[in-house]
Length: 242
Image (cartoon, rainbow, N blue to C red; front, side, top):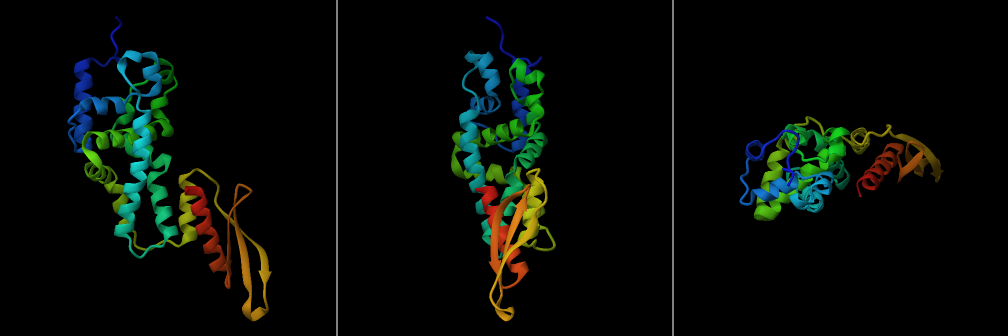
């Protein structure tokens, strides 16, 4: 039977790579097979069905856990922030690009098991593939040792990103949060457009829409234009992250 391997890696080098990854994670698996599975891209298991299941189900678990871990940590560490602020902060941390950068820091791009076609297409360099394998690794930790350990490992993985938010010298307003979120998502900057004004001069209510790439992402109302813009930005953040 043809020997299953990734690139030129031998079983011994693969074991060494997994140990290095455990060192990066600061966590040792009770069942190292879970970590190995987390690195198996569907393209690899399609070509090597005898290798076992791919990482897709682990990715599903890891995706859900990651969002909850980061949301809870931000809620606890930023008590003065509104829902919109917290949503924008979480979105920056768990955006596909941000996850891919963390995956590269963990050298997951070098350890991912790919099929020949995906390997030829450099799938291990794409943000979506790297974000998925990172989520699968988080899912693997959870399956190996439960919720609390997975939370600890995840927060440790993202400690730099969380510290960066905590060390910011000023709290961004919602418009700035939206601007940063759109940048993280690779979208154009927002445009605010006054679409309605009601009431007498001394008691006016403004309705403002925030527009991105020609589409309205949110609307806000307020006695001041800035207030309406902030409300529109908050709605846009919610729409982008739901």
